[in-house]
Length: 158
Image (tube, rainbow, N blue to C red; front, side, top):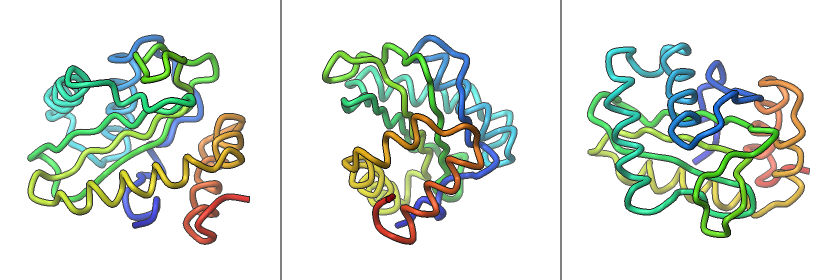
């Protein structure tokens, strides 16, 4: 599975304003609403579902990366977005470090395979230090989109 299969390009944020875990999740979910990927009426229940998932254990996987995600009946296909916080946000990460890179996923409950493949793709790409460094220093959403496209075509960003 490629980033282009699930990342809504119009929802990518190169700078999040939020300073809290819930704030970042809300800002990213709102960007999916603004991009037309999720319905405005579903925003609150999606944010609540993601926060409930966070209560089970932080999706801050370490090295400045978090992958907040949930399954939600309001979506018919996997949708996601990417955001960057230049200052970092306390996300209760496994390594205790602030998070700068966020990949948010919302998938239909009846498509667990897509959800897992997207998580695998994200985790594989994020093992590439150069890819992460380029994402963190991206100047705008278009730069992030180009990095994702490059990762899709080469398997890893150069």
